[in-house]
Length: 294
Image (cartoon, rainbow, N blue to C red; front, top):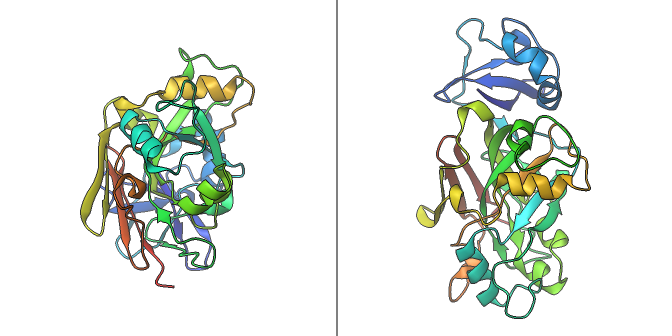
């Protein structure tokens, strides 16, 4: 199943069920068993509600509708750095990585940082240029995991039982801020630097162990990999995070980006005003956003 938030006529988020082809939608309040809560509330009550989430009537055309971010996280998004071998290498060689030990390329343990909830924007939303604070905007195509069943001390063997679904995240980064401040939070968390969507896909409809992730900038393919190539896979990340932090329904874990980001080129290819970034993950969909003109 697929879900997202559609902009309603009164300017509010309208949680909706999306058909398998991504062509039509049904507001959750108009399903066979109506639900009036948010998608975060739906995730928290999933086991009790999922049987009633069936379409009623023909639905509405998605074409022409404005999609908002499928989730509105209340906590920071958990993110993972340097989680593909080739990207870890390109980052190490770029001169922008101040987090590594001498001689280290691939990390020994997951590199965890966060992005604020306010950084989240939806499909086709404009990414702010932030020209007054950065000149080095970069893109990072990533698979994101959505927690359904919360918990603490989750073993890797039980990890997938705690996953509700998946989505796409563009882990946008102000590289100069990331480098200058010697930690990643500020460079990752500027407003609008976390495009998410176009929707969320439930765990039963996606294979996280074999899916292609691709990213294009202005129509040119920059990133292409399979998510099975993660250094630390999804169970390892859930086990690591939950060891001392209680994960909650609706938490988002962005799993890391493959090689091909802007700093991986010589010279670096940073995003410019008006550039378009399009990310596709097989089995989920396509997330596309444009950098603001000014």
